[in-house]
Image (cartoon, rainbow, N blue to C red; front, side):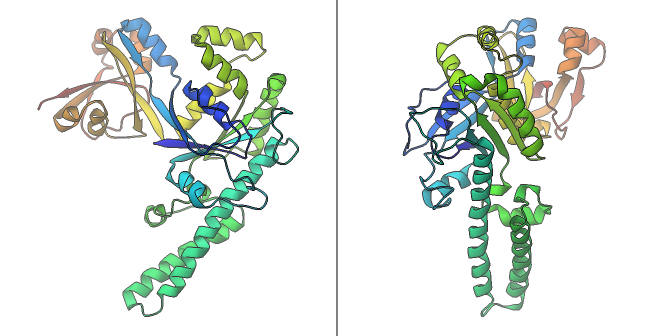
Length: 366
């Protein structure tokens, strides 16, 4: 699963990509190919478990980001989302909009002025307009399809037409597909269209180093004006985070450096990555031992047998049961043996819906 990073030209999205993935993609005005990389998902639980088990290695869950080539130069003015750019966005499982707030006289803003929230509205409008164009084309094909259609075919076309008209009217009224009430059957019917406003969305304001003291205010406004049930938002300084990533410091050193710059608490970058993971409807179950402590990404409420297959197909094929203890219970009692003694290490079957933070040991036979 992947998240496409998008935004108006010169918004600093490649800088954000490099910061998240600790990569070194060239930061240029108009790239012509995507950059692909993965980011480690922050998880303090792994740090605690590492201290308990002293494993040879610790493995975080990951999020894949795709830094999409620059938006068309006229996007938001004379040109909409179409062609290859639209194809890139449709292939993604979620979208991350970067909106520029930083000043840089050497890199003028395409609108000749800075207003991150205006740019967010512009991108949201363009995503909506792209979906409306797809709907218009499909509605025309449906109308054409009535000619010569049989009774059953006409019934199917009538149902599709009613659905498309309904979501089109809602879109025109400002309600994105991700916020519309749709049945499972309707979602299946629409899935092939890859509507952009149906995808989970993260919005990031890219602040300048001279705006670090304004990040809290930016996030407060993002919470009130942008965030919704299926939209999450954060503010961060991409340039600072990219420089930290390139320094190769550990987490404690990075936190100290941020504090020296006036940034305290969890970094905006970590919040962005965690939001991305959640937007993909992913949670982590954990495995522990002297060899390895690891977070395994699964979709929320995946059954235990399927989750076992994330470790190895043999574990799914020969699944007998899972030994499960919650992270909190393991921390409370200190060891797996003590958790077993206290009765909180339990046996779960194939259809158990695995929860975020479950620590699992899979028993299997092949």
